[in-house]
Image (cartoon, rainbow, N blue to C red):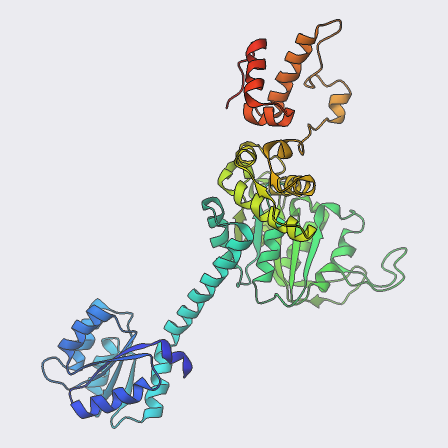
Length: 461
């Protein structure tokens, strides 16, 4: 009965001695007991104190229990009402049921029976409070892991709602937005946390071995199959299977995957014996999987079975408020890993991080912070950040791609080369002058004078 300690109960009884004795008994098990001698005073107490549950006699002066029930049905229909009465006429009972009375207890009251009825009537409320309490702890835990910014809260709230369910979850977002990390968090917060999380890189499965990797095979199923092999699906039994890059699943495999997702059953390659597993399925895609399905590049029926709940993860460039908190989180983790005192980010470094486009998203940010922390002193400045980012030269560019910037042809003077270099540096930094100056290791005002000297007006502060 320890759960009842959180309950506030209103006891309505016109006999003073009986009311005091019953209240004293209830106070041994419940958190708070309020008393009222009739229905009218009870209504005033409900209005001001909102008890969790009301226990009332039927026959009372001023306002009886039936009139109280009628008023509560209109004003507080969700508050449970237990009627205690010595009168068991059918007409009374039917009327009480019509008015939404939760339960009846006969007078003289058996205390064990009364406690059992209270526990049953309060169960939905107690369960709701438990869930809300868990959700609060869950949200706090997730904010520590994912960041507590406005842009992250939607993802956190969606994850909190779905984590303890058995729903299939589809995570969508660009490469590096944290889909694998989120899948790990969902599994860790689920009832399956003590079992395995098995990750399948769908894009890395060789086409001729994909079915065997997923569902296993029996000895002799194909050349080289010299023994039975358990597939990844079976290895995840009781836990979670994470199908990463699901959009890369070969068309030939999607039909068998559909049956597995739908029925949680499969047949190992070369076998005639069907197997069943109990797994939760989380998938991830770098593309909009619904659009892929509508375009005919992915089975539509498989998409709908994978996407009980879809959680989109925004790219980092669209959530600049997340950059600094995530950078600090990665910095703390890196310093702990290196066993060194915490390194700090100065204001210019933070401004630079927020201004960067982050095509590699969270994964790129983490890599930059780790490299900067490795070589920095006690403070990381903008120059330490800028030196971690080098331009990506593609093979097509080296081969003479028309969009690859080439220097001015020789013979030419140093001024022309410097002008070209400044323009390319600005282009690489997305037109951000402060970021470009930091990358080049130049004082910002010296950099601006160089731009003015060459008549370069592009870029922004």
